[in-house]
Amino acid sequence: MGSSVFVDVLGLAAVGLVAGVVSTVVSLASVVSYPALLAFGLPPLAANVTNTVALLFTGLGAAAGSRPELAGQRTVVGRLGLAAALGGAAGAGLLLVTPARMFEMAAPWLVGGASLLLLLRPPRAGQASLGGESGLALRAAVFCVAVYTGYFGAAGGIIMFAVLAAALDRTPARVNAVKNLVGALANAVAAVWFALFGPVDWAAVGPLAAGFLLGGWVGPAIARRLPGDSLRLAAAICGLAVAVKLGVDAYRSG
Image 1 (tube, rainbow, N blue to C red):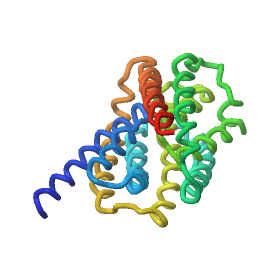
Image 2: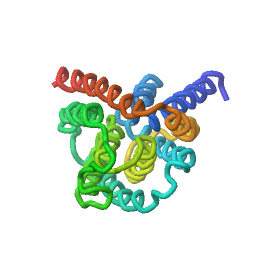
Image 3: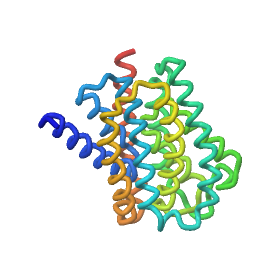
Image 4: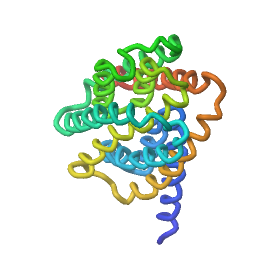
């Protein structure tokens, strides 16, 4: 293996590690990994689908690292996971047959709105909305967020976290664990579509996925040590910053 290839492999693995931690803690993996893939020379579409396929391993790592927070939540994960998988499939299918411009224009408002919801309306015990964890409204909301995740995906984890935090009467760390697993199911279905029909750079997937797997496993341990509502506030603040950046990029280019 040439030295430049070895450096690229190590670099992609390091990017995956950082992005995996960021994904499980504040739901912004692609803010780290997607620009890195562009910097490594991948075209935008190839970088997008390659990133989605590799992100599959963040979910696996997060599931392993979040076992304490996931205890007793199998029923809600299963119920919402089905809605997320269906939404992810629909979103990936849309991406393959339609231009992404509409979602690019809507993304800043979606991400910004979800972030404000987290920042201004922290969940309170006994005040869950969307009909609670067994409500049809919650499953419909998860489906819609998963469509967005499969189609465009920028900060989709923050939107999913905001939806779940509004409906589930749980601590932020336990909501985050559900978000990680439900979001991984949406991403997994989208990844299958892209693996079959998209321009995936498989040489980049391997080292990036290894980093994602480790980062996804480490991230929940960091999240559970954050005091009080700091997880929710960190996700909200990061989400607002991303919303501004997405808005500048989308509307300046338009």
